[in-house]
Amino acid sequence: DTAVSQTPKYLVTQMGNDKSIKCEQNLGHDTMYWYKQDSKKFLKIMFSYNNKELIINETVPNRFSPKSPDKAHLNLHINSLELGDSAVYFCASTRTSTSGVETQYFGPGTRLLVL
Amino acid sequence: AQSVTQLGSHVSVSEGALVLLRCNYSSSVPPYLFWYVQYPNQGLQLLLKYTSAATLVKGINGFEAEFKKSETSFHLTKPSAHMSDAAEYFCAVSTDTNAGKSTFGDGTTLTVKP
Image 1 (tube, each protein chain N blue to C red):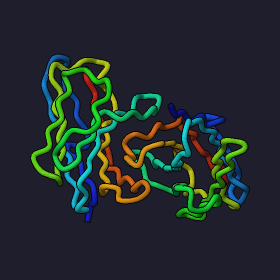
Image 2: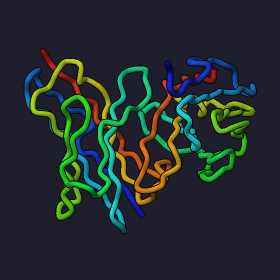
Image 3: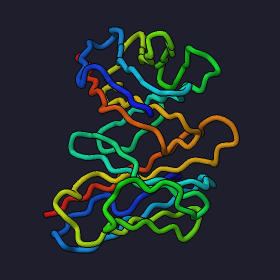
Image 4: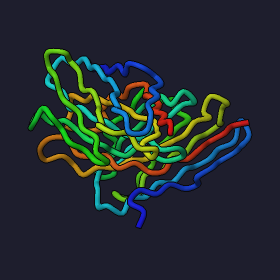
């Protein structure tokens, strides 16, 4: 069974369109994340939700809007897509830490190409 | 403040040879340190993490890393490379128990030659 799943796996779209990426985890975790990995493989945190509450919101254009309908889901909606949004977007999840730092489990990624 | 530097964006070894991937960190407080592996077209997978329990950390797939405070290093090693080890490796540092506050290195591509 897939622990962290993302849909779609590939997304090719035109500039200016609006698109959504979905993430689901079946690990019972209560913290979820979105990362962006660029063409040079540089990985950067975008957002993090804990129990549906936004706890990390890095400097990301407000065209990106995360939504967490429940603890198991964290979706990413992108408005007015730009060429520079082309990247691989990874979802991840962890349990809330009670001591130390918890292990992050990553999804397989969504490869977004904006033409 | 925290940062991590991976020395060498590409490392090539022969099958059976020692693997050494270098990572140096900077943090103002005792850090948590991680090594992740990313296979082509897949997400990151945790290899191992340092959480101050022991300086020598053993991970999956025969990898281990040693935390050296005096050198601010957390290098990843494996005694004998296997073809299946070819992948991208990321070192990450966090000064917070929230793993999402980690800073990732630029990655090292490991190539294993037959």
